[in-house]
Length: 92
Image (tube, rainbow, N blue to C red; front, side, top):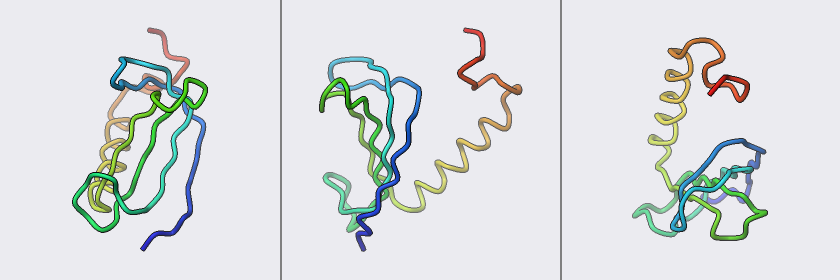
Protein backbone atom coordinates (compact mmCIF):
# COMPACT_ATOMS: atom_id res chain seq x y z
CA UNK A 1 0.00 0.00 0.00
CA UNK A 2 1.35 3.41 -0.94
CA UNK A 3 1.56 5.81 1.96
CA UNK A 4 2.40 8.94 -0.06
CA UNK A 5 4.53 9.89 2.94
CA UNK A 6 8.04 10.94 1.98
CA UNK A 7 10.85 11.44 4.46
CA UNK A 8 13.34 13.95 3.04
CA UNK A 9 16.64 14.78 4.71
CA UNK A 10 19.65 16.93 3.95
CA UNK A 11 22.80 14.84 3.44
CA UNK A 12 26.47 15.25 2.59
CA UNK A 13 28.11 12.72 0.33
CA UNK A 14 28.66 11.74 -3.28
CA UNK A 15 26.84 9.57 -5.78
CA UNK A 16 27.68 8.18 -9.20
CA UNK A 17 25.18 8.53 -12.01
CA UNK A 18 25.32 8.12 -15.79
CA UNK A 19 27.44 11.28 -16.17
CA UNK A 20 29.85 10.38 -13.34
CA UNK A 21 30.25 11.48 -9.74
CA UNK A 22 28.32 14.38 -8.20
CA UNK A 23 27.77 15.81 -4.72
CA UNK A 24 24.68 14.60 -2.85
CA UNK A 25 22.66 17.09 -0.83
CA UNK A 26 19.34 15.31 -0.26
CA UNK A 27 17.83 11.89 0.32
CA UNK A 28 14.15 11.00 0.04
CA UNK A 29 12.68 7.74 1.36
CA UNK A 30 9.17 6.54 0.60
CA UNK A 31 7.07 3.40 0.05
CA UNK A 32 5.45 3.23 -3.37
CA UNK A 33 5.10 1.23 -6.56
CA UNK A 34 8.55 0.63 -8.05
CA UNK A 35 9.53 1.72 -11.54
CA UNK A 36 11.77 -1.28 -12.22
CA UNK A 37 11.87 -3.81 -9.34
CA UNK A 38 9.47 -6.74 -9.86
CA UNK A 39 7.42 -6.18 -6.69
CA UNK A 40 4.07 -4.57 -5.92
CA UNK A 41 5.63 -2.06 -3.50
CA UNK A 42 9.16 -1.17 -2.48
CA UNK A 43 11.04 1.11 -0.14
CA UNK A 44 12.39 3.71 -2.54
CA UNK A 45 15.41 5.85 -1.79
CA UNK A 46 16.42 8.75 -4.00
CA UNK A 47 19.85 10.27 -3.40
CA UNK A 48 20.03 13.60 -5.20
CA UNK A 49 21.42 17.05 -5.70
CA UNK A 50 18.37 19.04 -6.85
CA UNK A 51 20.57 22.05 -7.62
CA UNK A 52 22.21 20.09 -10.43
CA UNK A 53 18.97 19.02 -12.12
CA UNK A 54 17.19 15.69 -12.59
CA UNK A 55 20.24 13.80 -13.85
CA UNK A 56 21.98 14.29 -10.47
CA UNK A 57 20.01 11.46 -8.89
CA UNK A 58 20.63 7.88 -7.86
CA UNK A 59 17.51 5.85 -7.12
CA UNK A 60 17.13 2.46 -5.44
CA UNK A 61 14.06 0.27 -4.96
CA UNK A 62 14.32 -2.30 -2.15
CA UNK A 63 12.05 -4.86 -0.58
CA UNK A 64 11.16 -4.12 3.03
CA UNK A 65 13.48 -6.93 4.15
CA UNK A 66 16.36 -5.58 2.06
CA UNK A 67 15.82 -2.03 3.34
CA UNK A 68 15.88 -3.20 6.98
CA UNK A 69 18.98 -5.34 6.31
CA UNK A 70 20.67 -2.29 4.74
CA UNK A 71 19.88 -0.15 7.80
CA UNK A 72 21.35 -2.84 10.07
CA UNK A 73 24.45 -3.21 7.87
CA UNK A 74 25.06 0.55 7.91
CA UNK A 75 24.72 0.60 11.71
CA UNK A 76 27.15 -2.33 12.10
CA UNK A 77 29.70 -0.77 9.74
CA UNK A 78 29.63 2.54 11.63
CA UNK A 79 29.80 0.75 15.00
CA UNK A 80 32.94 -1.14 13.92
CA UNK A 81 34.75 1.96 12.59
CA UNK A 82 37.00 3.97 14.90
CA UNK A 83 35.08 6.82 16.55
CA UNK A 84 34.68 9.79 14.22
CA UNK A 85 36.11 8.00 11.15
CA UNK A 86 32.84 8.28 9.20
CA UNK A 87 32.34 11.90 10.31
CA UNK A 88 32.38 14.85 7.91
CA UNK A 89 35.09 16.31 10.16
CA UNK A 90 37.42 13.32 9.86
CA UNK A 91 40.73 14.03 8.12
CA UNK A 92 41.06 12.76 4.57
